[in-house]
Length: 180
Image (cartoon, rainbow, N blue to C red; front, side):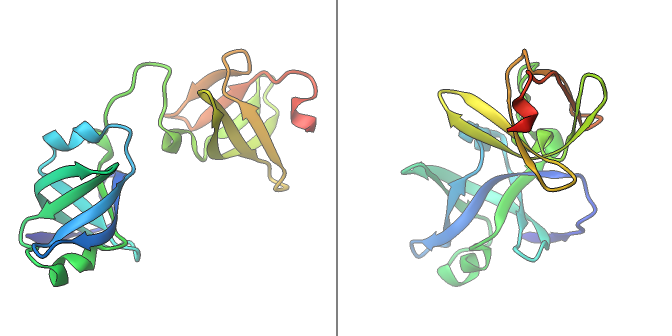
């Protein structure tokens, strides 16, 4: 059934967010937060994270997809009343079991909070977000200490090094980019 977990365990990656119950047997309609929905084939347990941060381990009895959402059936939650406790929760997996990306590709959460500096060592700020502007173009939203926002295109000629282990990104911005 459900085992309560301490917050201090290994970092987790959210893969879905419960939005409502479905049917009479305790099914949970969830918004997908992963680019790899086929990953559920290898998942037998999920970590449910309540809005207050409380974590619990739940057993995934079954799942299926319906209109770009995933429907979960959790073991031991067999009616609307018990399943409704999960509405608003995120479902996650341990970070160590995330889908490995090819070299040079990163998850947004790996880039967020990275320190951004120029090749000469000048501090620009911290990555607050990764913004997609269409046609596969991504921009780092970097916030400086004085709360100024810089948009840095994620192109090889500008972003010259990304070290997620050290949470550091080095850039070589063209003249004028940081003045915008």
